Length: 242
Image 1 (tube, rainbow, N blue to C red):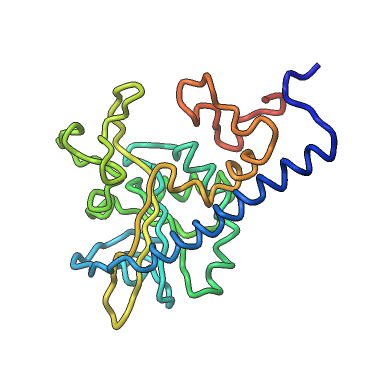
Image 2: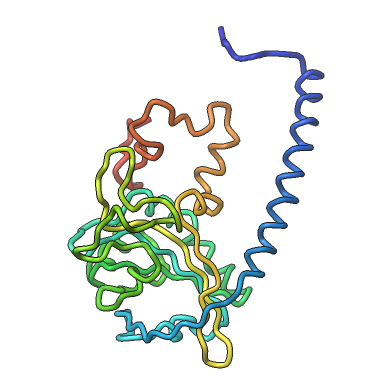
């Protein structure tokens, strides 16, 4: 016998209509925030970042691939890693097939990591993804956009997500890589940084979490050592896992 509140269909419908009012308000608020994102000042990029790509060395402006807008997902994959972050992999499973639709709206989306290109491509092949993945190992792109810890840097004096200490509070560990998403615009040959987000700011394009938020038990992460502790790479769950 369930311990959850039960009721009649009429009671459910009345409660659902009340919830719908809040959902609509959230949608309107989300539209307002999207407008405020677009109204942020653009910052010209004055560095010539050189990336390693499947087509050879490319500058940031080259990564737009003929379009005027660029999204870069900062995928956690350090220089010595042989696998990508499981949580970033969950995100990639969501956006990989969406990129062709973004292309129709003048948007290119890629991933960038400090891992060597050969390692990135090997993991990409394993996961079956199709997006372009470039290596920022030989430039300062990841450091400048706040997703990689510079060698010798003091993690207690650096911020991640603009104001959060770099060191993770839950276990006092010092990760060398964090995740993020950055947006850029290209106008008259000049690249501008327009937006970045981190941590829970990445959740809106994680289809798994959006769907879990709509099932009876939600994300069901209470009691875990940290919220995403259950996540595995898609080929690591096993047939009998739950």
